[in-house]
Image (cartoon, rainbow, N blue to C red; front, side, top):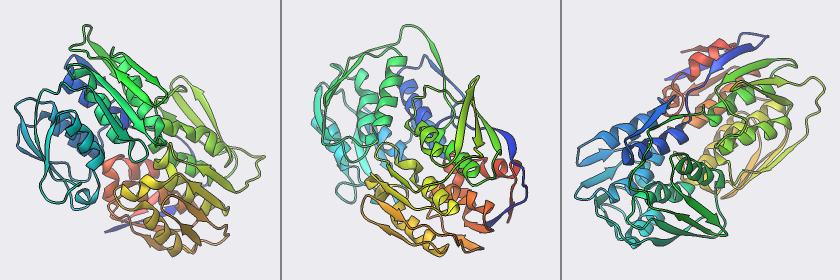
Length: 408
């Protein structure tokens, strides 16, 4: 099944309510499972968060997280400390190809009982929950920040807290900061100095808390792309967003200023406006801290006809698909010339985009959504459009509200 997208409006001025951040929601769901007095408002209703919630509430011995990578990592840590509970964590065929060894090694060094059921270093894994008393561990920091966040989220429930040493250059540092900020928000004491993170134990939260989840900045990226590809003066208002966000993808504000998009903050919402006196130049960025917006940025640059050089993308190879190879495949279909390495992608400038191409999504929500704004330039078809439910279930309906029509 495909969906064909065409531009049907020359005047994009709309207001969109974007759902809660999947990243914040999944962290808070785990904290809520550890500290039931926590209340969550504006939680994400994306597939990944629903999978996370169901798993935390499940009494089953086998829990299938499907494609939800965050859930696999976070739940591996969570079930390791559920004393007396035996659980098998499994997932899709792609999930069984996504490494988890660094996290499992760290948990085992803390005393966890985990075994691989198929291939060493990969799900499915069998976990026997225990009371973990060890409190010092090290973990590679240049692979996936989700491993680090998984350890941090369970650390206040460890008998002696945790002293975590990060080895090597830190990847996606913003997500680690998000985790620490949420721990602090619920009253957990943390300390981050040099390459060490210390989390103090906290058996319970004295005062019940309600935490409002900010809307997802990764989802906002598609609207930044739409405005960048629109005519001067076009604007879209999005809610609910904070100027001082926990989310690293809020770097979109500065990144898309380089593509002619101005962001105005007002009363927990943002208005994106295409500037009239803007001269576009080639884009060169290190996205080591914000790799999830790489696909949107490079698709935007194709639509603008400018060159793009993105680095810091080594984690994209272990996402829902190998996103670097997927990008190269689909950009080439559209007539672009690009080169990839294990951690970068370079796009050559072009003024030609081939119309009516069918974009494969590889079961990856971001492939579907990042290419959709190109419908403002040429008609385009997106394969397996339902994949967006992983993070943004209402995406296609919201696109229609701002003038990008879909035809199944």
